[in-house]
Image (cartoon, rainbow, N blue to C red; front, top):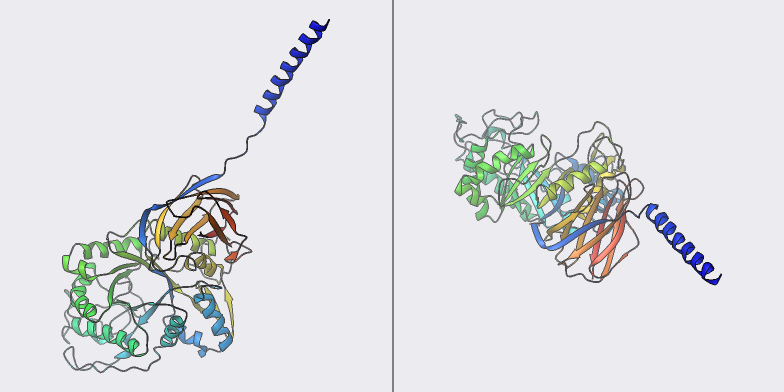
Length: 466
């Protein structure tokens, strides 16, 4: 009897264990978190900074020409330039027009008749404000040479600089005079206490606009660089070129510069826009490159984060990611920081009021935390819906930016390889429909690893320190 009971007990226990094993195997297993590797030993481009422009009189409007009060001026400046509460932008792009020599002095060899009002349509004031926030990079760029130096005789509607191949004018060869004109503009800023660092002679040379514009072929741009470059270099300025209206189009200009040994040595930074074509790869140069102007298409003012319009904050965040990771850009300069009406700028000015778009906070999640002098480092994720980039700043912090393109929240384990951070903290900053670069609770870093969740359709920046 005891043997039968013992055999029954053993048989029943075996059956129970078999049933339990079958049941456990049938239960859904936990989904493994996305893994991401941040590799400090894989390095890409250095970072010069992120910026904006207030050309065509927008700086004067910001300075109160249309009723913006001093208090709101300061608030807008803080939003654009403050490193603690705003975007912390670090590049100001200035627009050069014919104002410093509006009239023909009597020919290209005549003594120049420069004039300077110390205002430059509000840009001097703005440059001084930017400098007070710590901005050190000032990129002055010309949309056109003065009309009397061009084949069409006017600042607007294209035309080409007289003296270049294919641009013969009765008035003579204005190449050197135009080079001197550009350098003189930078010198006027120097006397105002602003050090122009980068100097450009053309904006969208492949586009004829009804406003200030000038056409240059890639060959003509190379030709002028060989006149302008030595003069600008001797005066202490870096030469930037060519601000084509599309990234693919800029590749043709960059290729032409690289093919000419003299021009190649004179250009410091290759610059392109992304209106006609988006960033799909690096420019064909070993020099630094900037995405130097863009704002998304749109016909109405938009403050939304992710509405599918194509000019919301999410669109801008994705464009910045692509420029940094596909284009290896060292600089990213948005078009208007603040403008009027149905602007695609970051801020809309409205009399003595203003409105802030989520585009600003999309920019801030990059620009506030990736500082000039940083280096982009390796960043890969097992989930392709997570658009990831990483940077080592000069102060030793590591910035990781994660844009979740998925409609589901994504748990992520970050492996911090070769970053020098074995133990420490990561501070996340979240931008989505209800947060604007908002600080979140810190996450512990241990054994060179941290785990966090990136919400659906959200942008999270992690500042990681020991």
